[in-house]
Image (cartoon, rainbow, N blue to C red; front, side, top):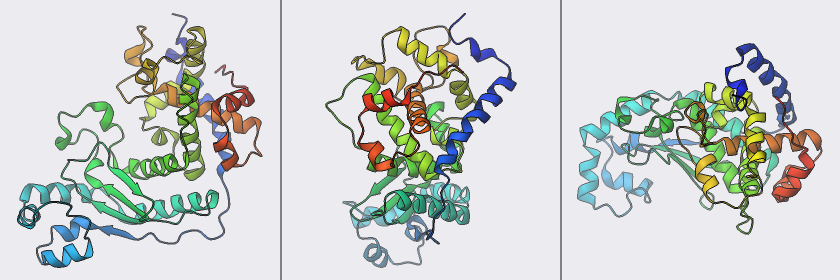
Length: 326
């Protein structure tokens, strides 16, 4: 078939395409004069499950952790052998030295572009698998970042049985820092609810991905997309075909709300409604918005990041001259 004809092309072409596009990342390789040296990381659950630490002492140190759970139930959880086993398994997967270094580098880059940003205190904790689908949350007012380590125990982990495979793709320790980067990027990118067209949606997400390029210039692109390497390669090889599909089916400026579920929402694949669907990568709308923004900076490399974030989708698209050919 003509559409998605590049899916079966040789690996040589794919690798060539990747190497050509990697040069765009050079824009974000900056020299940081005063980098963050070390991040304050607190393992809440390590102390929570330590019976040698009195409950009152723990509550005093982390008064916001207990929530509305009664003391009696809180004490029972501290001694729950299953919860303890899950925590120990999860924390054993994480290289804390590397995590500290990677977070320090991430926070340094965020501060470089947004001087008002101050590195947050980072709290690791175990939700005993209850919060694994949203394992990162950021509280800017308190300058606190929380990481549920049970959300990063590795795809195909026995404790993830029953969870859709497409979620598990990004549930590895190597996904922690990119997901933190994504959460921080979302904090800086404001959505204009008056703009409801598909181009607005994909460029909005493209802005978030662009910030991830700026925040994590040394990280692999597939991790930023919550992809596997194979999924990223498919999207890259089919970039022109995806865009041609959007154009030929009049989707680019459409206000059809169903496009979000087809091309933005996490899932096992994107929904082109063709026989290639099961082979496609998910969330290709986000991928396309990212490439539009990358092309914008290739065409307008002197644009300041804060100015770029203020621009609307139509202006970014027009100035990008985006016409992928693969």
